[in-house]
Image 1: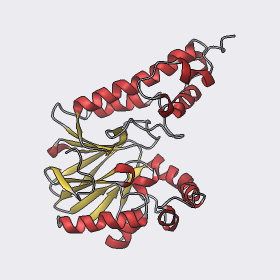
Image 2: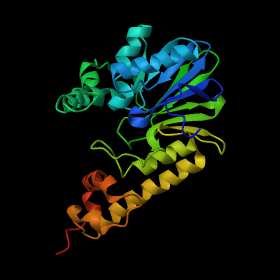
Image 3: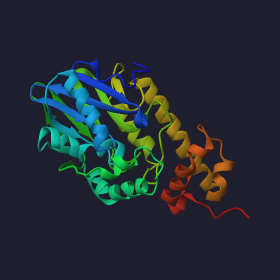
Length: 288
């Protein structure tokens, strides 16, 4: 499946189609059932969502009857309004934290684009109307697509506090959102939880079989072995942070002091957030 960016929707398992879009290298997934199509994530602006809808129409697999947002980040949620314009008052499913975070930070994202006059997507993002999920849950939910069930599971905090994964049991497919990324290392944002991320991936691994197909939030579909490797690497980041803090290395020296599995510039936020989240009992006073 590598290298299918911009090719529209491709079937990766029985009635599970993935489209990979160049902007943010984001994946949008369709899951088909007797009751229509469930779209998982809606892209990052009204115009980008319109491109997705055009690809849905070209696929010709049915009408969209529901939306899932894997987390609140705008490249996965800012197309919600466009899908509702096209298909009516679709239910939008998400974890309760994702709904609250989109409400809290969505307008701030638009303001960042307003303050970036040279960004080619500036006008698109600024013109987007934010629509919040209206079907939220705390732990797990099952969606009935008629002839198949789809499971939504919150495995814990990681990429954000409101991550969910989508499991299609009869197809042995799991949509992992940004808890798993293939085209680059997982991204640690100001709202990420690096010390808990490995444990959340343990829950995700518990949902996989040896032959499961996993669709990451960004990049090509992967297998269980890839997820295991990424979990272990995220775990190295967390344990390195824990070790440095326990030895009294100050946070502003930790990035240069530690041995990291990914480039240091990618992990600055992870280190800062990790130090913030560690309990006092696991941190020593800085060495003099």
